Image 1 (cartoon, rainbow, N blue to C red):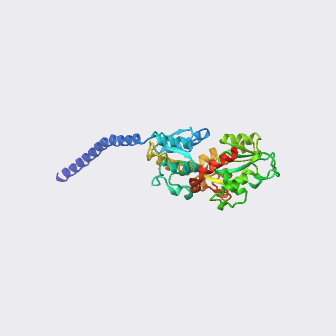
Image 2: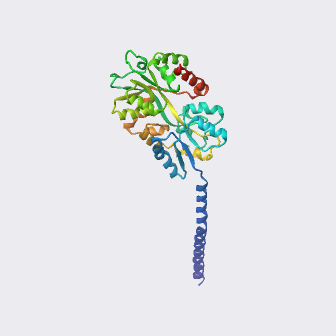
Image 3: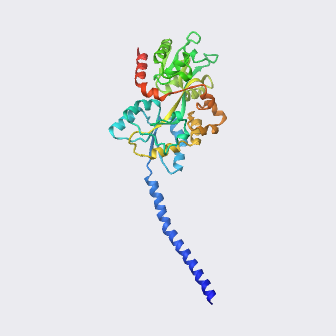
Length: 358
């Protein structure tokens, strides 16, 4: 009897413990669920501003959807992250943007005005970007290049950048951007300055080089305008973004060609306006966008080169030619120097506009 009673007591104890644990689980489960919901509800929407068009769909697939899978939410705004708009928001204390698709001139114009947050590299992984493009107030999100394109119907051989300035060898109009960024560098490379000796830029020498073809120069303001001038045959050669040159090559079935040789490699940058509404959630979104798979999707959609070195091995063979960050393409280009622009952009840009209008 004693053994049987002991066994029954043990069985009852086990059953009681099971009931207790089950009851505790039933009580805890709603509490945990409420905690998860509360965490999700406290995560703020991140407003990311780009320049619209094809970038809206491309950014959605490459960045928005993966971040959503992690419990975050990016809201795209395609109105254009112009430096003046960012500055106005910050100075008025009415900031509605969290992440802006900017560049080196964004740093040059807004850093001195204390309009950008410092990148939180405790959240954003500095090892997932080239060291030279991880700045205090901006971090590379993709790579792009300024390159030379030409009309093969009028230029039969493969021209060099020096040929861009040779009107006797290749008569016809030339096209440059209505902005000094990259144009100064390409002028100097064409004039014989080595790729690794560009900075500090000899702007006087660059303007002298431009002056040799000034009578045949047309200037573009937007990427769409650069495409139009080349596609419609207005210009024999042009200096433009490689992404636009890539589109032109496809649109014209190869009539417009381009090369990365002697181009200028530049970073597109994520910048965060000072006092952004989402706070640190913006940096969690940026960290999510460092995933190599999404960056390869952006390359396939628009030609923007991956910033994460780990993405290079994921790039399909047929896209390597159009990837500005591919090692073979990097090797034949110069790299932009942000420090020089932060110090000199304002006066150089104004001098460039004065040259055009004179």
